[in-house]
Image 1: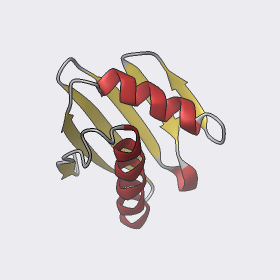
Image 2 (image 1 turned 90 degrees about the vertical axis):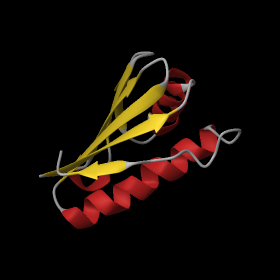
Image 3 (image 1 turned 30 degrees about the vertical axis):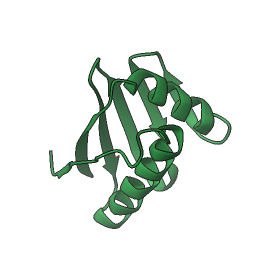
Length: 97
């Protein structure tokens, strides 16, 4: 398994986390609260998100680098849709964390 993390500065992390989880709950296995969300993504990937007052922390885990890179884009694009007033959000991915 490979991992990456991103610190995404925003004062609306909880809102975006909940919107994203509700959106994906129609097709994927999702569990969330206003502060934490976990989504089982396609191809064995998992997104774990935590909302803070000033940021959204995103941790992705995937079986291999190719899937991880693809899921980075999926998560970023979806979050930018919900954060259209702030988009594009700055994702600073730190691989291998």
